[in-house]
Length: 241
Ligand SMILES: C[S@@+](CC[C@H](N)C(=O)[O-])C[C@H]1O[C@@H](n2cnc3c(N)ncnc32)[C@H](O)[C@@H]1O
Image (tube, rainbow, N blue to C red; front, side):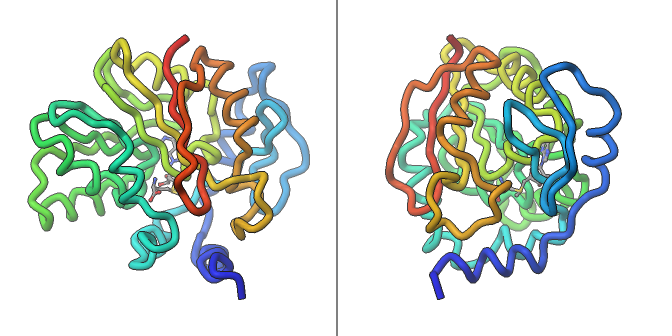
């Protein structure tokens, strides 16, 4: 069996989905969103030709925290290549259980990591981990489907790992992220590679590089770098135009 099939199947088994996003998705539709029949893993809402994936619930915490994640995805390589300064303020958007939040925290000892999610259960898990790990520079922030609630001009780097594809309001979320960036700040996106059939992840939970770039450009972000280092994910850097 392909080495990535196991986590993918496990993912299918444990990832319950939230009705929240589907409900919200039907509420209002600016013209950049369209609707259509929902596929098995989608919410029936489309953005720039892509169906938005269902949100992963807190039942998936065990999967997000799995021990073999370093072996499968090499998050340590991500940390080594973010170019963080010790004083930086970083936002981990769609942080889930905070797997990346707690890799980031030691790299910004004089700054902080803001762990943003829309699910209180995820943020409670992050708060519990913060106590266990004794990481005073971690903060949690409950966002909405459309707004990170980050203050304007407040962060040096935004990291989104395996989260953007399931934002029910990607345009509004990205506009809110852009507002939150300090001048010169960067948005770093990790998404499972959609153009690679070897990446055994459900199709709506993967994105092609072309699609990511198109969606970031729609909110005034340009691709300024990419690192071809990770086994199964794109690792893309964006800045304001
Ligand atoms: C698949 S998990 C990834 C978690 C984490 N980044 C990781 O890689 O371990 C995606 C997370 O995005 C969150 N999410 C979905 N829509 C969101 C939004 N509009 N704002 C913030 N978080 C959101 C979900 O609640 C979920 O915790």
